[in-house]
Amino acid sequence: MDFTPHLSDRSQPLKILHCTAGYAPAWQLGGPPRSTANLCEGLAARGHRVVVFTTKLGLEQRRDLPDGEAVERNGVTVHYFPLNGPPGIRSSELAAAVRERAKDFDLMHVTGVWQPPSIPACRAALRRGIPYVVSPRGMLSVYSFTQKWLKKAVYWWGWERRNLNGASAVHYTALAEQDECRRLLLRPPGFVVPNSIDLRAWRPDAAGARAWRARHAIKTDEFVFLNSGRLHHKKGLDLLIQAAHGLPENRPWRLVFAGPDEDGTGRQLRQAAAAAGLGGRVIFTGPLETADLAAVYSAAGLFVFPSLNENFGNVAIEALACGTRLVLSPEVGCHRELADVAGVAVVPRVVANWRAEMAAALDRAPLAADVQIARRHALEARYSAAAVASAMEAAYGAVLAKSRSARAIR
Image 1 (cartoon, helix red, strand yellow):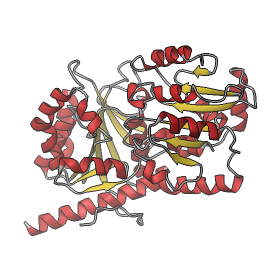
Image 2: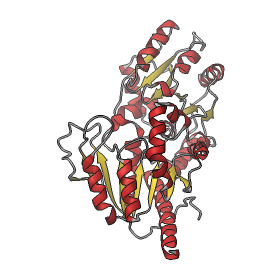
Image 3: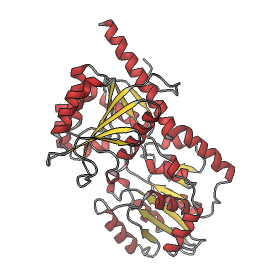
Image 4: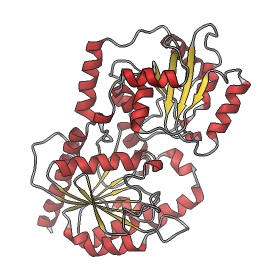
């Protein structure tokens, strides 16, 4: 059975249950809630009935999200179940609901591993004979296994390996993620569908860029290097300070970090910048709302993304959609898919190489208008909510066809 999804004509509407520990609008949890919501909303827009079971992780104080009750969100029915409290992300109400209602759906999609909500979801699907898809979202990477490795070893042999091997298919967001997971010798077939990005929110914003520069006293001739997202050790951001230290001192440039300090990395970067004599050139904006971030992307001449491990890398697509050039490390999952896009460079994590790339960027002209238009079309064809939902629909169709065939043989 070929599990490589192809864009297809609209099939019969499906009843889909999506189970995940965190969901929109828990934006502070990172990229998965946003891309998962974009996927679910894209599927709903194609006529499918999509129900999400999630927890109130990051949303504990939201009184407009009553515990366990149905909330309509952009065409998707979402149930936010309360957490039981530490340890872990546990919700007995979510577990009970998925056991009771799994039979009502054609297919289940489980996003995330190493999380207690996935255990009852996978068990319920197996018990009811419902095919299910698992999206690891980078949590099966070598890097992930090294974090709290003893706990994960117990979890892997106790639950997670069985959950994954019981799935009808495993969904990866990039070719690099799929390749990295081959070492696990999982039984189910895998397929690649990228993260869904709401490209309507990410467009060049010249007026916003000018206003943002003015607020930060950045002159029009100052070149802006930008990184956005969580300030976390996994992002490898210390390389940017080291690379910037050798840039020409007689050229006007700034290095901007836009995102929350999650584990003290922001404080360490400030200290490193001061020690390198770059304190006046480095700006920390803190977390930004979408409109403000689109303005910063538009103000930047080069988006710098040196992550140590990234299963996909939503911010790379956001930056490109706003017209910015991009340099990223091979450890960013989507690097192979972006290698043919104009204004993109994939550079190994070597300080001298990144310094050379950043120095060269100071003299590069903005991409021509026709190149920008062609690049926008390529991004829409690959990453828009409509394109990703159509590709996932095709993958679901392959899963269900295989399930029907297996039942017929039995």
